[in-house]
Length: 426
Image (cartoon, rainbow, N blue to C red; front, side, top):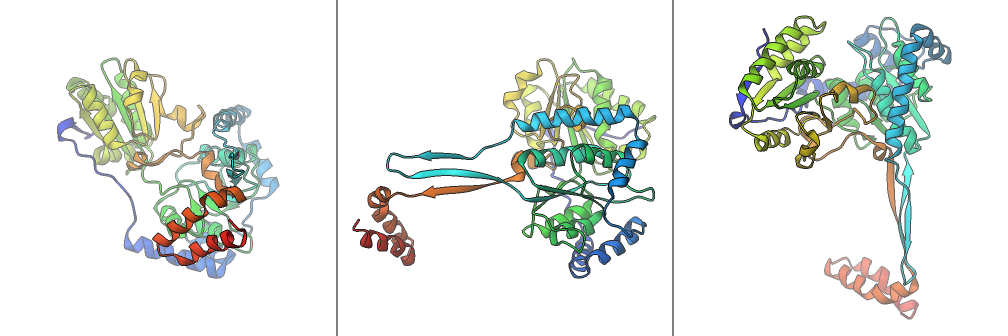
């Protein structure tokens, strides 16, 4: 029997679960980074042997291995990957920004130049499952942004890299793939080795060691985010199918024992029904030990008195995934201020967004949806401001700029303008 807690909304207090790692983990990761900086490929191979228990001679995956992966998948699954790729690409193409310029009456030209990053590293986790969806979600926005070079790192298993990951990468046009994971992969991407060229940005989820490594190399490279454990909040009223609510909560709980599954309901009776249904479905779930620990330790079923209290809880938690399994879900949309991805209606189950619909599944976790956004094309571009200042504008505004500089006590700033006013007779 699952022991997920049922609480009243007025008694619920949300505490952000920001996993920053222990001092020991921090020291370990810093040591790995230092070794990779100093020893390059050899350190990467040594740590792969130590942590993944795989001995590798060739870091880069060959073209033959990529093509051979197609023989290990059914044609049906290949087609599903292609359809998901097309859906994700179509959605993200709408996010693309362009440079703009404006000419003012005095001859000034002001604008913004949009430039894609040159080289990006995508980290695809391994471990207990294969994640071809992570390939699609990280690679396609970068491709649409115009990134010239996209390189992928993923940890090898005893049987190599899962075929679905290689196929997903190839279907996105990615052929520079390295069989390396963990903190050593992040260090190799940030600093470069004899084989792996350094990148400008690293994206993609991973375990706590990967998260710490990304945090430590930030500034040498950019990163997407420090992702915490996955989370879902299902908001429901009497119109919701209890079986659907439980199934969707379990879809997140099976990720990790630290994953958080919340439900906000308007009925104590429904809360108890959901609790019972979780136990029923959990009994036949292959990853039930992980899911049960997640629900018992992190999960909550919260009983709200009314719609207003439900919305307060939603915005307080700022969930990574928010499902509105209520009547007229669109009527709630304007009042939802903080959520990574919002799923509206009984058929908009969270896995729809994870795999197929089109929006990105790399989302802000641990309440960071209060101030951050899903991974997008914007994450793979940078913007430069452009200024062309005319003679007329200098004559009109030069002395104002000098006065501003003098007020801040920066004499050289003021002189840089004053010398032009003097020599140009302005």
